[in-house]
Structures are given as structure tokens and as C-alpha cells.
Image (cartoon, rainbow, N blue to C red):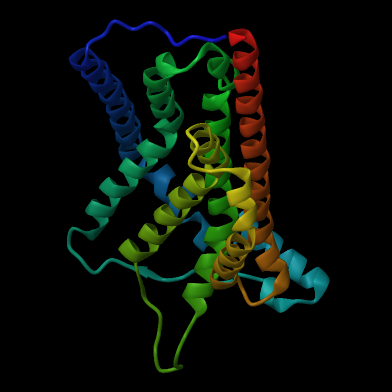
Length: 277
């Protein structure tokens, strides 16, 4: 039977260790944020503002697909949205904000590693074995979520909100802060959403979530996913499916993970019971 690591550290010593993990995490975020601040041309012109261009890879592929299927609705962002800055310090404050977000995104694997190093001593030996790939899988899922949000959701969002109009008398002049905030919020949120299997893993471990619970609210989750897809995509089934399918797949994977965790816990309980006899 696995035993927890025997730690003689006092409460204050645990706090001191946690403090150093947090400090190291913050330092990594600041370092990457400074690099992003220095290389602003790359961060803004080639990354942040790129989905606004008709030459962006997603926009070009969607237009080609639209021509093949004779569906003009799939041709998105054929013209760039005009962006304006209406505050004197608007561009500078946006530069700082984007740099911090970039620092957080790039440093995420290391930040999670620091969190994991603090938590892992409290786990049983068999739990450490099963969870040894947590850093890799959490980082991979986060990066996949970032890429999905950036290459799929962001171009569709720019197209929908940039071309939406309640009257021909109103011209869209999108504020830079609004544009960039939507991009960074959406991308980071998608990265976090893709962490759903990892979250379910830990919630199942501590008994808050069960496979039965996830199955019970499966239909509710699908409705939420479909509603979200319908809001941020053009009014056609194909675009909505592009956004819906990965999120539905993540939910189903989370159910499988929860089942496996519950099964392992039951096997462990049976093993302990037989050893006690």
C-alpha cells in the first residue's frame, strides 16, 4: 500500500516553501512578459493583429472552402477591420497588458510545474505514478486550447462582431483596447477550458465529481456548447460544428477519465481491505 511522504515540516515551513514556488512562478511570468514587451512588433503585427488580415491562414482556408462549397458565408474577414485608439495612453497600456498575458501563457508549463512540486509530496506513491504525466498533459491541453482559440474562434469572432450591424447608418470603428481584450480573453479562456480533463481528474480524486454526475448533466453541457458555438460563428452549420466538436470531445474524455479514477479508487479500497484481513 502506498504511503504519503513523511514530512516533518511545520505549517510555517510549508508556507515558506509555497512562497518560493509562487516567487519562482512570478519571476518566470515577468521574464517572458519583458521579452514580449521588447519584441512588440512580433507580438502585435505577427500574432495579435494577424487574424484581422485577409491573408491570415484561417481566413484564406475558409474562403477557399467557401468557394469550393459555393457557400459565401464561409469567406470570413475578406477586409481588415479599422482599429482606432481613443485614449492618449491607450496603446501603451495595451502594450503592457498584452505583454503580461503573453508572459502568463508562455510561462504556464513552468507555473504548473511549480504548483505540482508543492502538491506532489502529499500524494500517495501510487497516485504519483498515475499522475506523473500531469505536467505534460496539462501543458499540452493548454497549448491546444490556445491554438484552437487563436486559429478557429478568434477569426470567426472578428468576422461576426466586426461585420454585425443594427443599422446602415452606423459604421463600426473598433477600439484597439476592445479588439485586443477580446482576443486575449478568448484565447486564455479557451486554453483554460481545454484543461477540463485535468480539472475533472482532480475533482474526481477528491470526490466532488463522479462519472454519474457528468453523464447526468451531459445534455445540459451540450446545450451550453451549442449556444456558445452559435454566438461566435457565422450562421452556418459547418462553422458551428468546427467549434462544437472539440468541446464535446473534451467533455466525453473527461467522463472516461472520471470513470478510470473511480475504478482505481475502488480497486485500491479492495486491496487495502484484503490486506487488513
